[in-house]
Length: 395
Ligand code: SAH
Image (cartoon, rainbow, N blue to C red; front, side, top):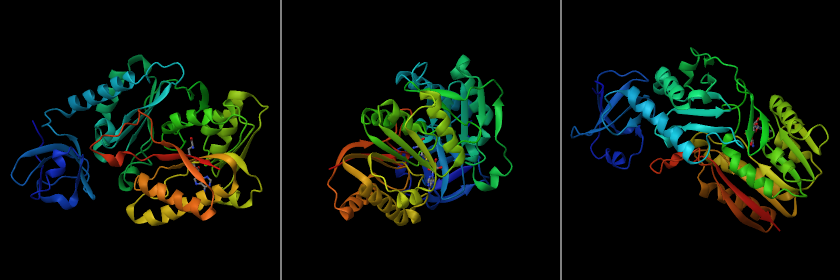
């Protein structure tokens, strides 16, 4: 049985359904039969009364997030299947039972056909973040699906949606353990060890999405002096040290992140290293430093969360990278990123181009970077490609 609430689209607005785009914008709606509240499962129909899809009602500018383009008889079956498919896919790309890397993204929202749901796996502990009320209301099914897919690989489930659910709902919600176990907080990534703050850390605790980019950085670090800006818990720094960097500086404004970065360096290399951590605002650090470096990483938080912040964000990337080009040594390498969803690859590249031109340095693009395969992007939902990066060689 499909749900009773019917969302009817304006004529012509069913076109995006033919291309499997999973969002219905409020402007596309002609009428609603019934009175949905946020999170309800609703059916979407064209103006000619053709069934188009079933999804969660959100009521905002994205009015519905589609879960299925087929009629849904039983949402439980759909979600159980999707979680199993997401798990099977991670198996196929070699992420499951991998001795070198025991942390990966298990569910990547639209990329895995489950808008509003992010699930990360940390060596037995699963951290869930619900980004929509609809998915949050399916919590028990999601939990069942994870237990079913992961079996003995699952020790603990933590729901950390307080910061990700829309404001008016998050006040009722406390982060909680859905399954209590002796969860471990140490993970291995490409043979490197990391302590992850699963309860308080940013996002679900670790920036799993930079795994492949960190690995590439390791191969370019030998003998170099490295500056890791927005270093969080030292991800890129550990790979740089492992790759033979001469010295590494990590800068982040969060004390808890910097404390963990120091612990992570010790965990991997003991007390005697050429690593130094700076708990400081990046702009201040860059303004005051008298050093120059052979390799600089810049991985700032999203500068633009909304389209209207786009221009400021692009100016921000330009300023930041211009300063980086000033302090990079000849023959140096820059890893520069944007994780703003609204900043396109092209826009980001233009702001780096402007930064390079302003400083007059000769810059070559040697790699274009993105998110790894456990963060898949549905070809029908290009908005899912949020991480954009470039590796630059500066003459
Ligand atoms: N590269 C990291 C992830 C970076 S996330 C990794 O691989 O794990 C962005 C980081 O920037 C966060 O740790 C946040 O604390 C830090 N940050 C945000 N604004 C900052 C600022 N103005 N100065 C310094 N650090 C900042």
